[in-house]
Image (cartoon, rainbow, N blue to C red; front, top):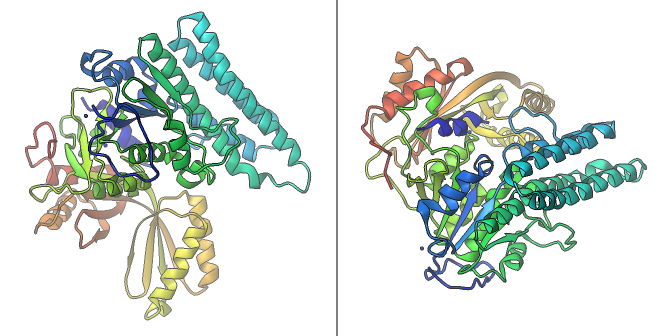
Length: 513
């Protein structure tokens, strides 16, 4: 049942008929008379069109004129396409962008473009059996690929002159390339749904050949101003072109930001994310599929804790808009449509204190800075070290301090960590800096304010012969973090899950919706 959930935890790097015509007003709050939902479909789900059609669009066999409309869909690129466009999210294998940014030979990136074209046309061939439609689909994405390749070639030639630096244009290049994946999947989905007799509408937020720079909200307002939700099914691109650059600001979380802003600006009754897994109590591959339990309800605070560990249910900035507008978020498993999924709201607190999720992150580097002179000057040291970490775009998962030591636990690669260490040494020559590779395992819940929970957690790790290197628990008590040796990561997750989750009979879901 939870095979797809395992894919989520494996990433570890880390859920109504109304007005017939949509009228947008900048920053409007949710209209209680509106009944539409805004729904995002993830890349792995998008790669299975039949599942998207049957389990999401036509869920429960709904009639094509009954309950079909009053929904907006925001789609991701097909699985693996964004990796080919930019770089592989896990392995770091370079895609078109990385090759263009770092290669001396233009044949490398141009060959990658052709490889991408081949893959996109393979996907089209799997989706369109009609040769006329297949040619039309290939022509649509082919024209955009040609435009992109021509732009890259022109830019490369311009930057051969000393007055132009390639580095100054790379942000724009990444934006342009990222847009291709969502344009491909959104356009295809619209054509496929039209073949099913559904009045789908392609909402292109990529700004391709637009030339007009807008804010994200302005682009959404403009694109949706003529949409009639009572009779049209909008399929919007997860990427949106903005004046400031969506990729630059939100990296690979850009589609969730687009999804969130559409929900906020249109006053959605509910925001729904369709993924290929349940938000579960732990990684089923570590604790066992029978032991992992889907989460029925939780809050945005818990979602933030997961994001901090690199396991985003939703990007924190995207969650902020939904939370402020009091729009509930539901995370559903595309491949188990009968399950109600996980409902995330701002005000939810479990009826009784409990641990809901055991999550964690490997490949964390503990950067321990010891200096006897730190005593009495902690604020100055802390500020300077934080500035250095920010300069190198360090990802701080957690930190701890005592009288003469500050330790930051960074989710960066070793190369970046070494640069940070060197810069700290330059700033504080007498500082003794130790770097150690560790893992962080966290017990998370919407309410964990009960006596004895921390002692049970520590006891379970001790019984498993796991040495705790550091412990963190804030006064808000929504999470407990344990720093352990990286080799103890899997055992620590399993041990904490057994002691804090499996001892309770949660049935089909923890805090069922």
